[in-house]
Length: 377
Image (cartoon, rainbow, N blue to C red; front, side, top):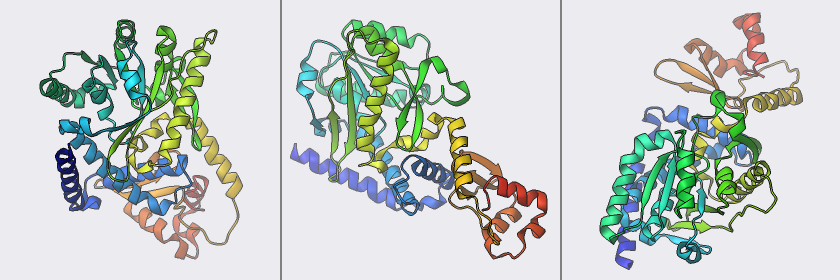
């Protein structure tokens, strides 16, 4: 096994060297993706100084390279370190709902359970099903051939109406479920179905979370096993299996969904604050935020910090300017809104602190509009 460990470490080092040879700032879309990432960290985990955001973002990009490699390197499943009652769970004849997040090398969770003999149903988003489905099946077939596995594996599109019924049947037949609780983004925002989602506390914000995992657990009386994957300081992959969440007798389904989801997110928060650079969800968590609450917070911030000064400046805390190929973009870091602006306005905003009479230069209407949106303050 030690030879495999050394080989694995060498391959990770090779991935790192290739990654570090890139000029990331010249990569297409880098600046806008980083700006969205930075806004989410600022809104949810404001304790992290803004000046550290880009370093975190680049570590996340490297983590994604490692994650892709882990899926292709079948032996990575044999090198995983585990915590918690793993053997008890694996040897149990009853199924479980294994609930996880896109932290660390998250793709290893389902394959680890399958590699260890469990019948597994993996629920993924439509995007993952379409874009990564072939790669996931290639890994499964590779494990089957390498370890002569005969247990079952199926992958379901969580956004298909029939998926819930299929999962219920699978759980009742003894097949365990693996579900990423932070993965389905297409049913958020304008497409949100209020009867299928509830709000939970998440750092400095509330996020909308789908009830599915709690619903399935309550309906089938199947325990939820939160599992958090992360990469330790030595780059070892760790899967931490936490205490089961079990439906209580007499607890109605709605209450159980709310309690179990909050408990899962609270457990995840403990790991996220330790390994913020390993969570892919920073790139899309804004889709789970409530727009009305974001606007209220922005209005509250404005009333608390509004003051009259003789000289205004561009509000770097609230906005970022991204020079895209098509045109400069003004990005609202609190509301995740974008405004296409002219190159002249971009230059003016960046220099406004040095201009004696900005209202005369801009014109009163535009000047007041920029003030009202907190673009200048």
